[in-house]
Length: 187
Image (cartoon, rainbow, N blue to C red; front, side, top):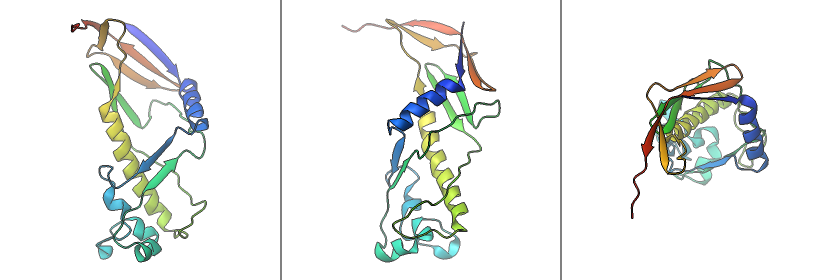
């Protein structure tokens, strides 16, 4: 049995370093699963409330009809994580990986500068909802793949099925029962 406590200060320190090193950035292209319809410059069914980049910036549809745009995202400020018992990330142990999913995601979006034109004030809510949908697709994809639990020396440590991850106020507590699984050597 092992128990690990991780303070939100550790997580925030990692995010601060990643932000200062410009590591927190991602480009969404039409090749990202589920993103292509939203990245179109032309919505094929405008009458049916279709949402795409051409909805927010009609000049894209005029200048670049039937094309796709890439969206480059990066952290503008240091991310700040607040760990509570009602956090929006659900984490579970799956053998030798930590997996999870997002629930009830929110985002704040405002237009600071645009070289392709201003977004209509009423469209910011729609754009925020679109962003949250794409964000959930991307992050849930990463969380489904999971984070591998390290292998130490010549023994793999698998977590027993009754291991738990508890999100509490200001920290995460991981209660883990380990199973020793020797690694088979290949010659």
